[in-house]
Image (cartoon, rainbow, N blue to C red; front, top):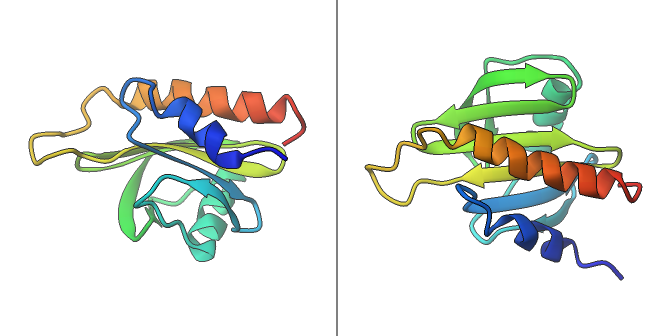
Length: 130
């Protein structure tokens, strides 16, 4: 039996990543870092964006994020020091996130690092059918 949390833990040491999650496309939580609670409604909204229906903003774990970049299968978003990179694989949605450590943490230049982590996780899971 595969531990989904171990997949999330694989990206946490990566530069810039403070939190991660793997969600089923049905909105179920497969694994999520402590302090990250992504609801079914949030997943539904994010999945719609990942499927090409771009929205100006959306929420993750109750925080409102502004969409920076969205293409088929992935979206980047930010809210002050909060930064998220989200990718869709065959069966799931992966989140690589940076939550600010203090007021001075603006999340500057974190996006590309999160992209790399989320894309790595998405490709790894996609490669084994997820």
